[in-house]
Image (cartoon, rainbow, N blue to C red; front, side, top):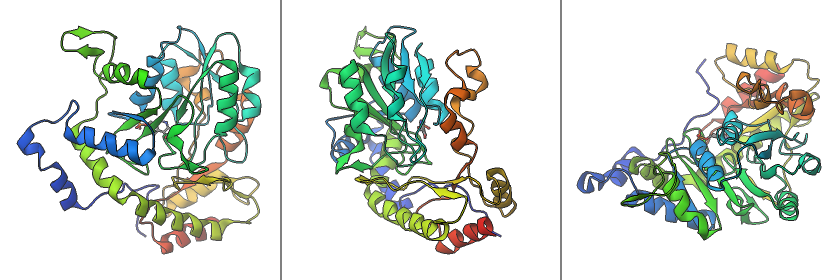
Length: 367
Ligand SMILES: *Cc1c(COP(=O)(O)O)cnc(C)c1O
């Protein structure tokens, strides 16, 4: 039987990409704010309906850099969740800040907003919540808590490109949002990422920070790194953006097919459909909770049939070896996240996944 991977990158037409990169052979301008980069930036500002977008070479450095831009005192605490890709926790820690892990809720797996306030101390400076699978965090409550307590909110929105809440783009919540444009994401630039924000006051600083801290031809104001997006990445983004709404529409069909087959099966829990949220259908998580086979057995069975599902997110980031000396990292303090991480599997999902393949996957799961 043919191999089915958990994801498959969207690609524009080959000729379309070649056409898009053609000018680069004349301009010989390959990176550092070239015309493709600037074009994509403006297209994304319009598409995401947000005043400022700064492009990066990947999502991780976008997140690490926006956190750095706020210059929080070393050792300050940042409230976040362990139910995420390790990038989120690493971006906080690599800035010399302490991740304080809040549990997630058990219906959409985003931060449990009822537990945030009890974790705030005099050292807390920010909240870094994670939108997961195309579900959004409770942005209204988070933004209200942050305003009341004087905290910054920086969303890890890697999973939430093109998602809307009450018609408003996910890029507009909190102080800033990071998007990942990695090849496996709904919208991609091969590798890439962006930070979206409203405050015009940080534009120049972010642009400097991703270019070694250089703020003018002969001055370097910050100790920055290098995280710039190249012209070839931007060209891929320009092409992919043209096809995005069609791709999301196809993903929606795949998800609807899965839901038809798996909804209401005893021991199989599907993620809720959030009210007022227009999803991007980024992932299809299934929680095996009291099902006749446990998660690992289903995973192994699918593998035997050349189908790769993904234990995502598992393990929790607060259980990783690299955080063994971090006093705040303890899975016992985030029991819901642990419960879900031990039972979740994301099933193959991409725009061109055929209905027959969805049926094949479901047949194996349902046996
Ligand atoms: C993909 C992802 C990242 C990292 O983005 P890259 O572009 O791969 O660097 C961070 N957080 C989450 C939740 C992600 O899914």
